[in-house]
Image (cartoon, rainbow, N blue to C red; front, top):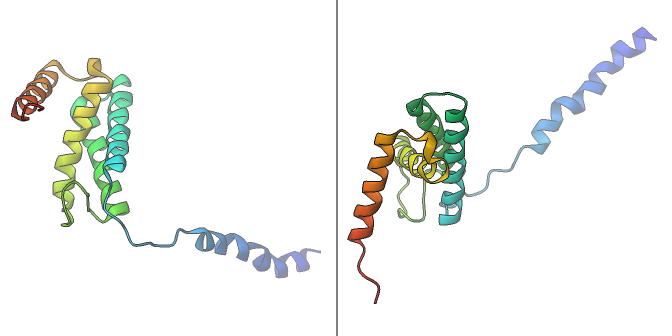
Length: 138
């Protein structure tokens, strides 16, 4: 019986080795990230900041990890392209800067108690300044 098992083992293992290759997603043409996708990615990053801060992790580290997550998602899923930005793919550094800002803004909205007071003040000032720059509705 053990001779039979030794000879058939490669046949039994082969499907297990081949299965991940068969189930791997087919690379499709990456479309730029839509505003809805960007909203989702921002929310994911913000929730990560909130969870990590509640667990006692430093704010800068929390935001850095959340920003990197968002940047890597956009790079991997959309080849660095974002509809709202235009047709040019953004570099990983550009993605990181924007993603960190998005994570901070999202965290300020979702879990303001987990955002340091000085950062919250900067966020509130930026929101006020942005609101003042918008033209009045007609």
